[in-house]
Image (tube, rainbow, N blue to C red; front, side):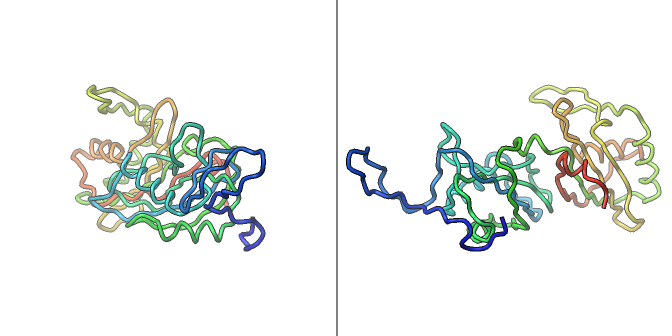
Amino acid sequence: MDGRPGQVSEASATVSTTATPGAPAQAAAVDGPVAIASAPRQRWRLVLARASSPDAASGRELTEAWDGAVESTGLPLHRGAGRPKARVLFGAPVPGTIALEHELADVVLAELVPRWQMREALEPVVLVGWRLIDLYDVWPGEPPLAGQIAAADYRIEIDGVAATDLGAATARLLGVRSLPRDKLKGTETVRYDLRPLVADLAVVGDGAPVVVRVRTRFDPALGTGRPEEVVAALGDVVGHPLEVRSTVRERLLTHADLDAPAG
C-alpha cells in the first residue's frame, strides 16, 4: 500500500441500523472504537521508542495501557474469537525501566486502512514517554511476532572499570564454551548456561563511562539472554561487581533481520 487517500476505503466506527425486510435485526449503532470478530485483513507493525523512567510500566500494566489506547482510536480492530478486546502484541517482554529505541509491536485490523490514516489515528494516543517512530504493514498470515524475535541489541554504560580491563573480560567471556549462571525461577534457583544466549559482546571506545554493546539471543528452549546477567558475568571475570550507569535496548531483531545480507 502506498498510503494515498482514496485507494482504500475507510472503515466506519458506526454500524447501520437499517433493516432489510425479512432479515434479522442488526446491532445498534456505536460511536467509538470497534473490535470486529472476523478474519484479519491487515497487520500493522509499529516501531516504538520509550525514554527511561523509574516509573515506567511493564508487564500486564503496560499491555493493558496500550490496548486501551489503541481501542480508543476508532480503528476497525480485529478481535479473535472469545476475546473481549483487540490487543497490541509486543515482540518481546518490555523491561521495566530501561530506555527502548526500536521496539516492535503488531496491531491487527479487520479492514484495510492506509498508512497515513493509521499513523494519524495512533499518534494522538501514544502513551506518555513513548514515541511512534515508524509503522509498516506485514502479511496478516505470518507467524506471531513474538515467535519471530531472534535477538536484541543493548548498549550499556559502565562506571568504575578501565576500558582495557573490560575489553579483556569480554574477549575471555566470548572465548569460553559454557558460562553457568544461577537465576530465580518462581521460588527456586535454577542453573543455566548463559553462553549460548550471548551472540556478541564488545567494548565501544575508551572513555568514561565505558560503553559495552551486547547482542543476546532469544531461544524457545534456552530462554532469553538478559543484559544484567551479561554484566554480572563480566564482573566475575574482572574481579568485582560492575556499576551500570544506564542500559538501552537499541532494537529487537527478527530471524529475517539476522538472515538478511549485510549492506
